[in-house]
Length: 360
Image: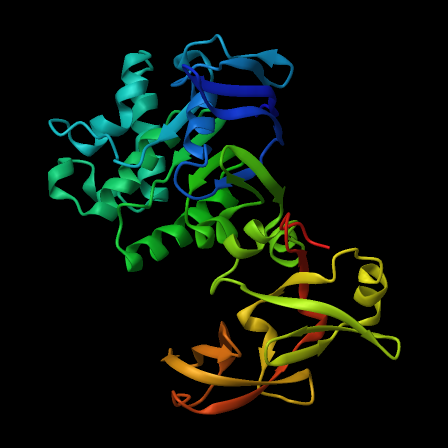
C-alpha cells in the first residue's frame, strides 16, 4: 500500500482553473473521503489520481515514485464507478473476472478470487446471472467485487451509492463500513453526502470551489470546524447560524442576538475577549439544545414545524427573526405553534467572524 501525496497539483480546462495548486497526503491503509457540494473538484481529484484526467501542474506520488505520467493500468488502482459500468452480455462471474482474464491470470486462481470476494459481498449465488437480472444494490456489489478481485494497492470509489434509494443506500453504507474494517487497503471515496463521509472515513477532506477547506477525523470536523462552510456542511441536521454581538458584563462574555442572550464559558470568553469586531456569527448545532433547563442557558423558542421521528423530534423554531433547528429527545410529538423553553449547552456554542467566516 503506497502513501499517496499530491504535491502542488492543479487542474485547468483551457483558461478555466478548476483546482488551484494544492497539497494532500493520504496515509497507508487509510479510508479517505473527499466530500463537498457538486462542482467542488472532488471527482476531478479522484480522476487525476486514477489517471483518467491529466494533471495540469504538480505531481502525484505513490510513496516517493511520481505516477502522473503513468497510464491508469500501471498505477495499481481499482475503481468503482457511480453507474456500475457492468458488461450486460457477461454473467456476474465474467464481469468480476474481466481484468484478471485480460491479465492472463490462471483460471483456477481467477475462480478462487471471484468466489472468495463474492462470498464476502454475499453475491456468490448470483454469479451465473446477467446484470439485467439484478437489483441496483446487487449490481453495486458486483461493481465493488470487480474492483476487489484485482487485489490492487488502492481502491477508488466515485459516488458509488448515489443511484440507490435511501434505505438501500443506508444498508450498503453499513456493508462498506464492514468491508473497510476487513480489507487492509488504501481507499479513497468521493461523495456529496456528509453522512457517508462521517460514517465511513478515517479522514475526511472537505472541499469547496476547488479548495480544501479542512481535513481531519469525523470528530475533529464536527467539534472543531475551521469556518462556517465546514460547520454547516458537516453534521445533520445542519448547524444554525444567527447574527449576534459579543458583550461583556461583570466579567462574563455574552453572545447576544434578536431574542436571546447566552453566556459563554470562561475559556471561550478569554479567547474572544480581544476580538476586534464584536458583531459575529453564532453557530448552534440542533443537538446543542436540551429540555433539561438545569443543564444550559435558557432560551424561548416558538415551534413552527414539528417532525416527530419516534424517539426524537426535529423542530423548526423561531427566535426573533431567525429560524432555528432543534433536535430533541421526545416520547411524544411536540405541538407546532407552542412556545417552548430550552437550555443551550453553552460549551458547544461556536463563534465565527462575520466577514471571513473563520472560527474565532
